[in-house]
Length: 475
Image (cartoon, rainbow, N blue to C red; front, top):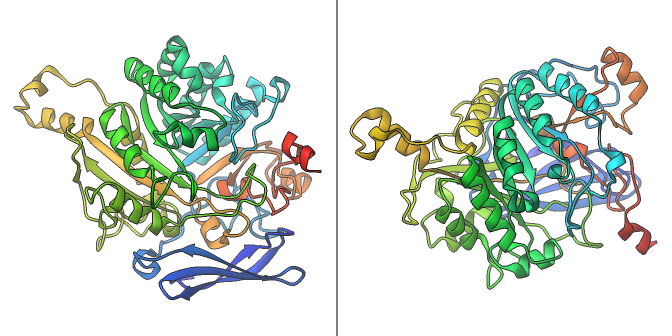
């Protein structure tokens, strides 16, 4: 596809078979329309309002899908590994180091509910890292479950830092970080540069709804610890209509950004994630919000200090997957946009997917890590290097990623994905055949939205199903 609208492919949200689909215009909105021969037609809004899809869409020169280049046999999304049809390399590799968690969240893409015996061994994690090495230089996110459930996470981080050549980040709820500064210090010493911190609002009512209990005090304590030990923090709110996005009294976007700015430079930015309905979610929950709605809410809830005109499409992943903007934050709550987004493309500034991936790897590593201590010369800001250091410390990013679920999955977007989960439990993809095709390598790279895709009844596309307490209670 070369434009915003036209044919693509998707999956049936009931049976997960690959089906023809198309992106259609409906006034100012964009819909994904698809028809399953068994379960009928499905229509879902994927882009609501301005900026319009035509102005946002970017065409990219495809890049190699990575070193594996497995043959295409069953077609997207069942040949991931990555297959020969994939159009982007790896920017971020996600390593699931545990299925355990110390929260039972209403929404959880990983449906975390494991036991210590389910954790991959250190040898298995070494094999995961070898898969990342084959993908080339990238950033690594240690995820789960809750990765800080592992006492050996510092050792895992050191191994990951050697394998990826880029930034190592921990995707965490922050609870252990808040109470264990020594553990956080070991993470920083072992090569972790940044925490991707679950942060849904500044009001404990939000946490009680989404996470099961009040957490704001612990979130704040975790950020304080990170400032002490030299870890950068990116706040990651899951945006759920009726809970924390607004409009009205439940709008938390503005207060989250204000809180983040008040904790700069430890907090490097905010990365919003509109809720997607995969993994664990409340029964019957289908409310969703689209990227342009998030952009507009940011403008409304920051009083216009930030606005939709500040934001750029991505240079790495598909243009309908994300947005971002860079600001200079002087420390008084104000922000200065560092670039205008339209016209002029993305932060990566190119339509070449391979160049965009390399630029994105560097961008994340540079902007999401903790800032280096200022040299003494910066106190007077009398030389150019000191001024650059001041700019680096004051840099603040606002971004969002629209992950796809079984209703919104657009296989053109999947083929352009650069966030890949290291996995070997490819249940639906002909494991034995693929083992032979990949030379017996256990672990491969699966695009994030394919890896976690689950049907309306909870059946996973890739992950082996395991009963959850909620599912047992409902049966």
